[in-house]
Image 1 (tube, one colour):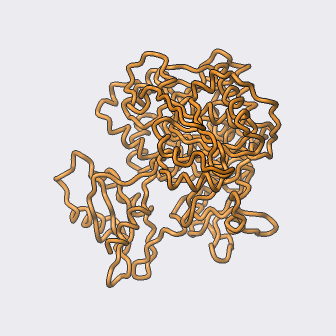
Image 2: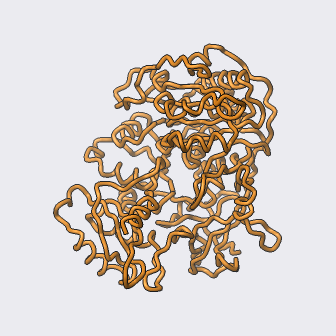
Image 3: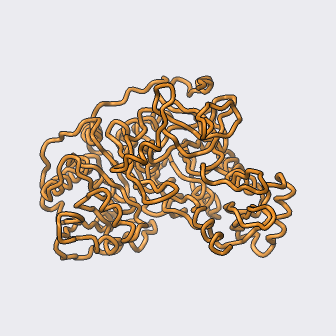
Length: 555
């Protein structure tokens, strides 16, 4: 395993990072003592100070304990970015319990798995999606949900604002009176206080679920210690101070937003400006109004942000750091940000590593690159069959070990065993991602282990083809999948969204011809289909599997 990347380590940064051996709620107590009157959260111009945050999180913890929640119990958290999400997250931790964050796009059938698998009896749910959780309440026995705390986002619209507030956010509080349901406002009004904090760094803290390639989603067991590692690593890597202002647009139920835009700023004593749903106009207004300095976003958001015809009307000069991951940033978009004096720093991580295991050095960032292993992390590329380490430039599976790697999948010992491999007495996490490491020790994604097109024996990596297609001036977004071919077995198909200005002016055949002229014949798309939009997950990632399955069904 190479240490070449240390030659490019961020200047002035130690290679080792000491992680506080505390529970996460201690960060709330410290920031409330240090910055009592400073706003931690700003939600459509309503400000919540660190002191107010601590007080309300404790009251939620008191309510949870009254419902019988005790140390180690799992509590479902099902809502969009909002003050209540953050308060509920830390209220659950203050009750010595474990947060199970759930994608707010999930429907009842999917939620049933989370309830059953986690063994949760209490859920904290947003009013607008409560109908999806309601059928799981009161199963009539000790299994299943016994209590739901329902929050109305509009409870935290206390200041007048000229920002465009989505209808689901400003919807008035509904008086739900079903048995087993408590309204957020009523829980706070009870003014209950929790018992002592008894969890330590190695107790379970949060359990995000990951879907993987097959079967039901699996809960990734993270402790206060594993979570603390990436939470601190993110802001230390970038040299962020307590007076940084974050724009939080990535969903908090997902580990990138949770760590980088919620828990990291809380530990640092920074301020977070919240948006529950992506809105490029509101984002620009918030950047200017609150002099946002730090922003973690994915490429699809940045692309949309930069396409705003009114962008030049806003002062965005305070943004000194923009970072993200999940998909490679197209070269042309990265260059446009550079023209605005913003370097987009890419990173890499998984639910199993509770966000980053790799980040680019801010002053030596490479484009479309995962970065280098961060503090105390080891990583290498191996042959996925023999687990022999591969030399620079050769494609293999990325293995990682470090303080933030999860403790296994909840109630799934077989999946846990399959996720790790022991080499020379060390346990390595198998990411399932195919990549290369270059001569400088930087890691690059090639594709998922399962996502590969075999065209006449040639291996085609869709992510590589997509990156090339973004160089066409008319292409806004592209997703590459395989299509059946009577001669080649599989062939390459590109599902493409054309920029509005180019619609009707470019044809599918012209894109095919351009691709054939700009990339190797075996990998250039033989089929191009124009669509209005690509299917995306709640975190903004293109759902290539959905397109692949649709193609397979049609074939």
